[in-house]
Length: 151
Image: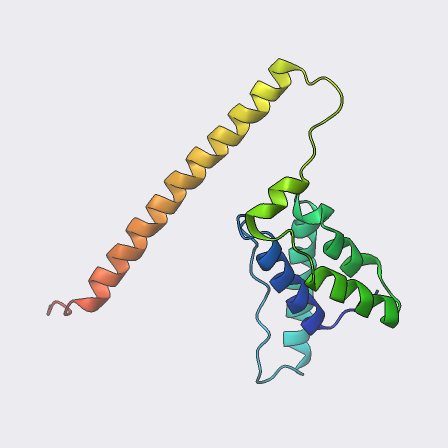
């Protein structure tokens, strides 16, 4: 399936709109000047491939009908129909939680607890990392707003 950058941009914006409670990684930049230089095109292509690899491994985003449409649809007419359908989707923002399904089969309590613990540890580490990043950014701002010391 052939996709232009504007198609990736459309997908990115759909994902942001539909899944506002999920952190969707940014697309590689488009760059207005020099966009036809071979180096830039190859670099952006590699970055888009990495972005797609990341997105296809996401347990929620990769299951989104609009994402599957983006990956599979090669017919121009079908592309436009699917695009319109995705743009009219009313299950956006936190409403997407209503689309989650409870597994029919019994879940092993120990397995569920391990998954919850894994998620809890991830959330804690993510919170710590964001706090550290905020601290570093604040320090950089403080250093650059003040005057420079004379040596």
